[in-house]
Image (tube, rainbow, N blue to C red):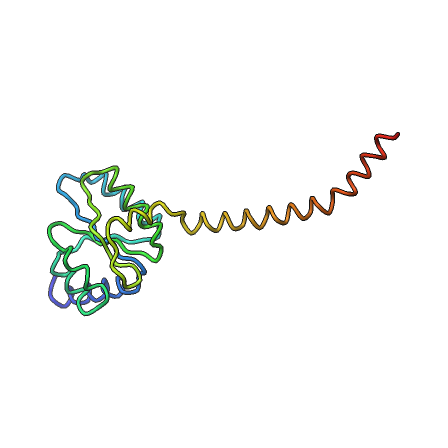
Length: 167
């Protein structure tokens, strides 16, 4: 890439990173297969997140003078940046991939402007996702409504059973 192309590319990446609620840095070790990486990128896409492998110098330029500057220390060796607006979903994908493929290590990241460690990212992975929480809320609301209907219906059902038993 020529310099103007690099500048616009870095500006685009900077914009995406700053507008994301979570940015996670992973260390990619040599020996990862194309199949593994394709599967990982697919899982990241399903989680509505993005994953980029950048040269460390470009990554440092992208996060310079922003709240993300605190992750510059992680930019050594082959590093990748994963970012999303759903911290739990992205953490689940990254933690799962790191466990399955020992060729990737979670280094740390930034969530809502605050630094997070690899341990916190693994803890986030154990939380239910947004969709799971929504399903639980809908289930709770539905069960309450069902209980109310059953409570209202039950006295008339008892009377009907008593009349039917006498006949």
